[in-house]
Length: 136
Length: 175
Image 1 (cartoon, helix red, strand yellow):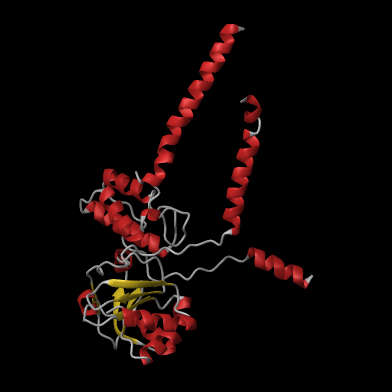
Image 2 (tube, helix red, strand yellow; image 1 turned 90 degrees about the horizontal axis):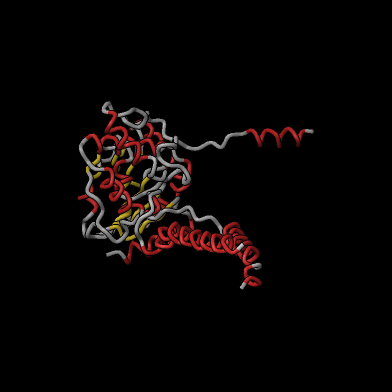
């Protein structure tokens, strides 16, 4: 019984992440006043990967480092920087890994070609069907 | 042709099965290395993070002699575990500078009092700006900066006891 209680307690426990006690950076959780600029920042943040919680975007993550990245992105967009420039700056530091947007790297060519190949296969299949339908 | 095509679903299934099985069996590698290794350390000027240590600027790291730049935080548990190894490196004559991430001066002071202070200079990066500019993805991390101010090596995670000789070796080689 005691074992069971201990097991249950383990199942209910929440992993404790060491996080900074400092308040979040000014624009970590605050939108830019200009909605057009906020939209630009938001679109970029949704495609930048969080370094702490590696399968979340920084827009979704509660990690303090993601908050700092959000604030930095919003401030740089307010200062007139283009989102793609910020993305390139981050890729220069963390590699393609940090961006969810696929690049034109040769290793990704099959990915870009996949829709065309699938469409071609579909057309071939359709042609076969139509031919057979006529004969019947 | 048709006879061969019948085997296609099975072949696809086996292919995917193999792919997923190998993905499950391979240990998960979550270490993200900075792409700036081999390149110049980004320029920065930081305020002091501790009461009894001077602040840190990137210009002070290109002194003609390799130095160790440790990224830590008083709220980070592995950083406390790393402290004895840093003290050992300091005793071996290594100059260690540090950047405290998202920290406050009283907390840094208390941390250093409790775990020892191996640092020459400590800069305060309250909003992780320098950390992001360096391509560092967490705390603790240690960078070896060569005499010309370039990043020669990045160590992700805490320095364990058996890492110390390797760090000393790399420091010697990073002239």
